[in-house]
Amino acid sequence: MATIGRLTQRSDFLTAASGRRFHTERFSAQGRLRSECVQKSGEEPAAVAEGLRIGFTITKRVGHATERNRIRRRLRAALRAAEDVLPSPAADVVLIARRPALSAAFETLIEDLRRAVPIVTKPQTRKDSAGEAAVRSSPRRGRGKPASDKPTSDRPASGADSTMPLLASGPGADASQGRATAPSPIPNACDGPTDG
Image (tube, rainbow, N blue to C red; front, side):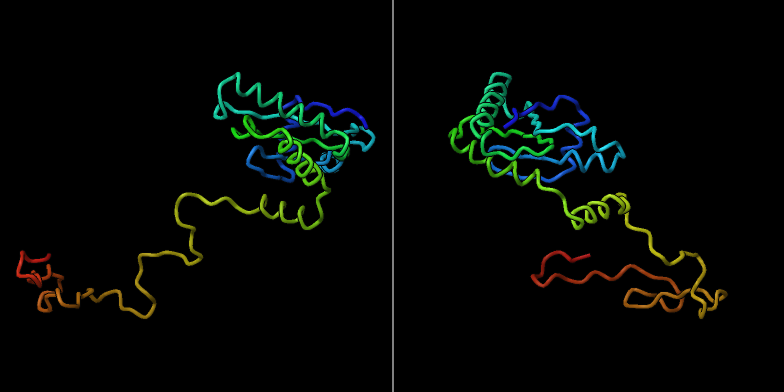
C-alpha cells in the first residue's frame, strides 16, 4: 500500500470540510474524494493525485502546545498502525482532534480511524449532491422577520370609508368622545392593592 500523504494547504482543508463527516468522542473526520473536486472545478482528470492525504486540526481549546503535539503524535501513530486496513482512494481527510484523544486507549484511536476513513471517503451519491446544492442555494435569512407577500399600506381596507373617524370600543372606551380611556382599577382578590 502507498504511504499516506499530508495535507498542507488551506484550500485542501476547506475542500475536505465540504465533504462527508464522521464524529467520535476523540475526533471528527471530514473527507472528500479529489475526483469530485476536480469535476466541479473543471480540471483534467489526469491531474488528480493518487492516494490518501490526511491533515490534522488541533485548536488551542484542546490544550496547551505540549498536549496538542502529543495528540498529533498519537493520531499519526494510530494512522501508521491502521494503514494496512485503511482504503487508499484519491481522497483528502481532515481529523479535528478533541481533548479525549489525549488519554484514550491507543486501540480505541485505531478502531475509530478504521471506522471513520472509509465513511468519509465514500463517493457522494446524486442525492447527497442535490441536497448539498439545495442548502447552498437557499436564501439566507436575516435577523428580522421574513417579509410578507402582502403589500403594506396606510390606507384602510377597500370596504371601509376613509372619511369616518375610527371609534374605540370595548370596556375602556368613552363612547361620547370616541376615545379610549384607561381601564378602571380592579380590586385584587386578596383585598390587597389594586391591579392596574
